[in-house]
Image 1 (cartoon, helix red, strand yellow):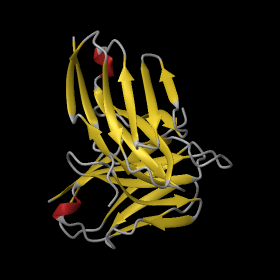
Image 2: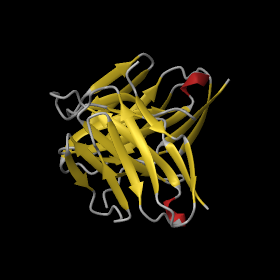
Image 3: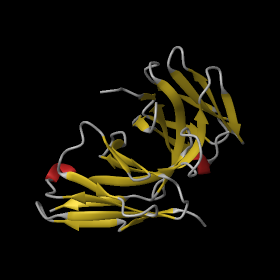
Image 4: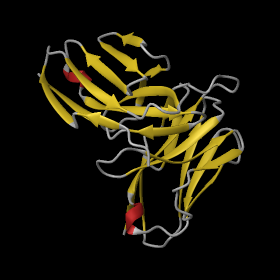
Length: 116
Length: 111
């Protein structure tokens, strides 16, 4: 089945040690999103790619970077994780390549990041 | 900061009861309103995408309405079942691909 896959499901890293979370999709969707969700809070959009065009939300910390080497893969890099970055990170995709932009998002299961 | 508010925060209902909850959002720059169901240990699943004022959509026992002028959407579940237990998220989509989620309503259906 076509899907959005996030690896790993759980990630533990040390304070200040760079970490990369990955997302892949078999849906051939042109938009990919990264969200951060902290406990009891709403998922917060960090950035999204429309094809290769990167769109950063204004309040996304500089510590967070993203790469999309091809249609199928998107990575979230946290350069120097702090204790406040512990959260669930959700990847989502939307849109067939030629579709309209009010398509639903398809989510992965998320990666829960812990910082020691 | 754009506020999308959902109420109630949590809800417990008996199996067979019908229930509803609310998503409120600013009506300016409206593009679409999305509803998702998020079961524990699974990924959020899309329920509805609503775009037109007065829209009403239905999927089995679940339906939703939209009022873009006053900035709210209701989600209704008729005859709740234990498998409906989940967190229900709404998300406002403004023009393009900007999404603003609410904190969700956590529904527990008691057998």
